[in-house]
Image 1 (tube, chains in turn blue, yellow, purple, orange):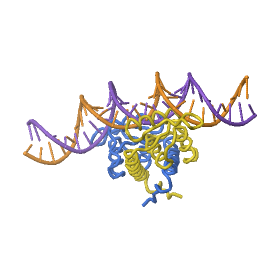
Image 2 (tube, chains in turn orange, brown, yellow, purple; image 1 turned 120 degrees about the horizontal axis):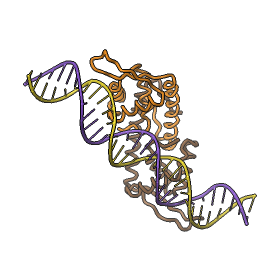
Image 3 (cartoon, helix red, strand yellow; image 1 turned 45 degrees about the horizontal axis):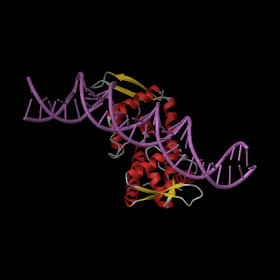
Image 4 (cartoon, chains in turn green, purple, cyan, brown; image 1 turned 135 degrees about the vertical axis):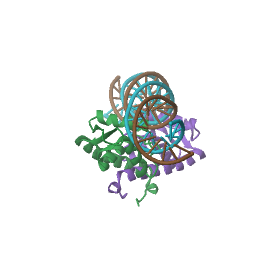
Length: 110
Length: 110
DNA sequence: TGCCTATGCCTAGGTTGCCAAGGTATGGAT
DNA sequence: ATCCATACCTTGGCAACCTAGGCATAGGCA
């Protein structure tokens, strides 16, 4: 499934919960946490992380000690704030769609 | 708020509930039903309706009797099926995002 | 030893969806 | 007479995303 304009929120959420994480681990985390629903290709995630860094929402550093060279990303303060903001926006978005779909489409989360 | 790749579902849902409807009324219905959240511009909706018609999900006819000339849209059988399918997809999408965001982000609909 | 897979990073290019910005025309209210 | 709401439409562009590649190392296996 594609991420439909909500990729930034997903990335920020993973980075917020998992702490400093490298790109490849973000991909596997998204796949695992979503039970396979979000199998986001590398060509989507890496440019997105670069975008977030240019926007000042994350910072990255190279980790040399690891078994392999890795670029590790971490949220900035702005990134944490953006995460909160985007999550509110997500909530409003879902509410809006639910409202259009009608009460019959409402779900109760498990 | 923009519709983030779920415009077709929203249009199909409005057409399914409201019966034969013209484009401008679709726009006002989306705005009203979503309590103002989805104020979708005409330049988005009209091409989208044409797309749905080319895809065979809706049919249109001109209504001459109305106070003004209007093109009225209606779902086809394929359109109704697509609505059901896209609604399931929407549900899976929401579940996926909620799973990534974590249990703390879960909401109970009103 | 050689090979294959998983890990881990990256970019170029094309497609698509959506929106901004414009245009046209009529009906009703002031 | 003028303005706003209604009602339709298209062109052009941007941003996001994916496809399709390329590069490199580590570890398992034959």
